[in-house]
Each structure stands twice: as C-alpha cells, then as structure tokens.
Image 1 (cartoon, helix red, strand yellow):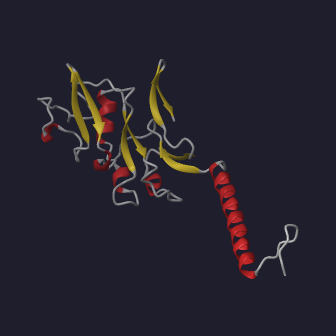
Image 2 (tube, rainbow, N blue to C red):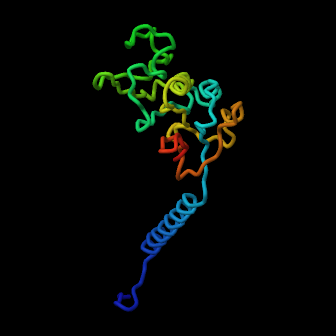
Image 3 (cartoon, rainbow, N blue to C red):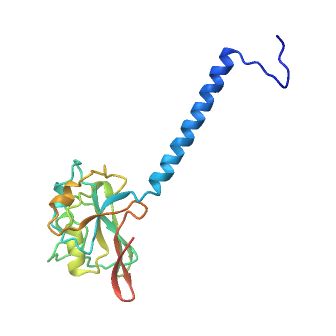
Length: 196
C-alpha cells in the first residue's frame, strides 16, 4: 500500500521510535516543572548567624564531614586592612611578621599580603580552613568583625538535622532560604548589621 500526504502509514519501528521520543519529551517537561517548583518552593538550608556565634570551636569538630562545611568568610568591605590584625596575629605578638609562631590560625589558612604602609590584605585559603573560629574571635575582639563563620553551601551535604546546629550552645544555626544562603554581618552607617 502506498503512503499519501493525508494518510501516512507508520510501520512498527517508526511507531516505537516516535513513542519513545514523545515519552522522553514529556518526561523532560515534567522534570523541568519539578525543578521549577523546587527552586520556588521555599527550600531552606542551614546557616550560621554571625551575630549569635560565640566562636566555641564546635563547628570544626561536630560536622558529619571529615573537614567541616563551616569556613571563615572575609567581608572585605568591612576590613580595615590593619597592620596589627586581631584575626591574624596571636595576642601579645611582639613582631608583626608572618612567622608561624605569630599566627593565630592553626592551619595557616589566612594569608597576609602587603598593600601599602600600614595596610595589609588578608585572604582566606578556604581548603585549609577548619572552621575553628579562632580568627573570628580575634577579629571581633580587636577589630571590626570582618572575619565571620559561614556554612559553605558548596561543601555542605545538607543534613536534615545539622549535627553542628544540634550542638551549638548559642543556637546560632537556623534554616534560611536557599535563594539567600549566607548571613553576613555588614557595616552600615548605623553600625554592623546582618544581611544576605
């Protein structure tokens, strides 16, 4: 039998191929709808509120990961680029140089680079950071608090009940919208303010 433009005949093979294509297309469409719903559904992630954090050190030891998902974050807009940085140097340091015995960070995760007298730039080597909070405590005690702890969402495995949050004595962990996953203190005209 000959096919005509108005009445095409499908053989079995063409029918199966077209059916698979239609099924795959509908499946991808359904997947796209699910992803769109999930991203707009109010999904939340765990985050540490730096205004409540007391730098107890539990972030470094209570995470389910071998190396905590909590890391130090530097809010550069707040930093004074001080020669004597309370987050970099141990208290009572006599010489302000990069010698290991002068550094507060136990893993050498904070790097210091000269900018101009008397300013230095401080950066965090994030893979070295263990989230112990020593630098954050020092920066808050002798500086403006530009060093802060945050759950790094690209590292976190998103536990249903965060083990660090359960052990946090300051109850500084909470669920925040996945669209705004970070809670950083920022300086304003009125003073420090939490924001995302």
